[in-house]
Amino acid sequence: MRRVPDPEPVRLDKWLWAARFFKTRALAVEAVTGGRVQVDGRRVKPGREVRVGDRIEITLAQSRIELVVAATARHRRPAPEAALLYEETDASREARELAAEQRRLAPPPAPDLGGRPTKRDRRRFDARRGRR
Figure 1 (cartoon, rainbow, N blue to C red):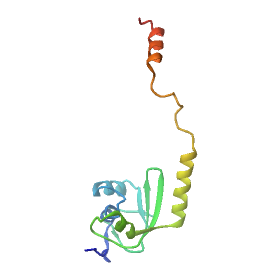
Figure 2 (cartoon, rainbow, N blue to C red; figure 1 turned 90 degrees about the vertical axis):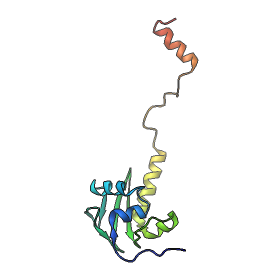
Figure 3 (cartoon, rainbow, N blue to C red; figure 1 turned 120 degrees about the vertical axis):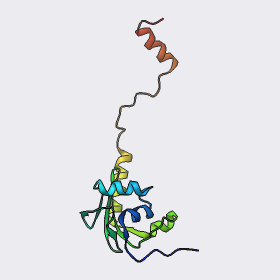
């Protein structure tokens, strides 16, 4: 039996968890209190009620997601159903894809050291240190 999303308001932390942006409600609460989630451009508390049409901005790792609440739900459902709870804005989607492309094309952050030393390299290190 497929469950229809609730039309009534839901706590922000519960909605973020139900929409699968965070694995647990505790992580959702931590993100909201840490200022990584804003509703209608303002910092809010985890207990704030979210309604259809609210604009939410979420900062996850290196990307910022802007979305509009399309529906509310009190319970966590499968991912395809959770994706129906929100609509990502076009500007957010383009910015996220551009940032991903730039990260993909960027050089690695650390110099390439060639990986793990071989047995031959280890013998050279030991010889320089005066061992053997």
